[in-house]
View (cartoon, rainbow, N blue to C red):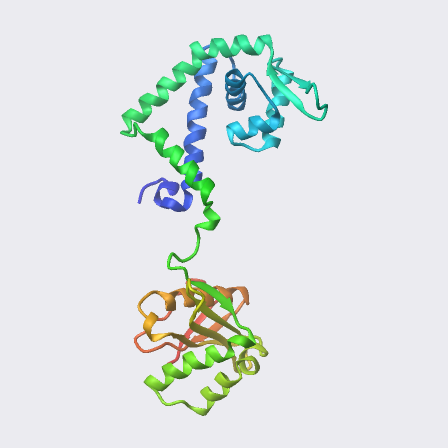
Length: 299
């Protein structure tokens, strides 16, 4: 393990690592600006100035879209640039609600100077860094990242890749809860009266007592597994029970997917101790939180 926490944690902090890299490069670029006599010219000024130099004029919304940042951020940048005498904020000729941003004479002169000096130096330094790191195609890869992230953001990429999802108990799923468990119990054991009572009326024996029942649904909408957190005794303990996956879907991580969801539900319910009733050859879940107690019970 290195001394770099972000690197050690891999993709978990990819965004933070990219931000850290950007901040380091911006800090170095600021030193180049200072050495050229421009002081600490804000990085946001540079991006906006380069955009206006290229497009001539634009509204705040258009600048935000062109750079890919929020309008409030561009509004703050424009305010600073107006104060520095670099841009003007003029009312649109046909619509007074729209403000047109343009470079002032000072802004155009500075942009022309920066293009031939500091911006060129920074671009060459960044190109040298990419070549030195063996990443000559980094701009193409960054573009691909941006396109794919716009098409499908991170929050849409979470979850199980197999298309599995968790479904809450409702009375319409009571039969599925019974059938899945009855098939499994019948193939391995003999149905006992206690099992029959719970499976025949899961709302009464589990839900209404403060427990929970979750189902696994596949990408085609079929219920393929179920599991329950059932209150036991009078000390606030719960039992992980009636956990089953349809035989034809076993070995596809559906049971693991369900168990993770049940553990998370137990945390949400602030369960302090629970009993885990495993299927044959099942391994108990590992819990690191000291205030939880784990008890293994076989059938």
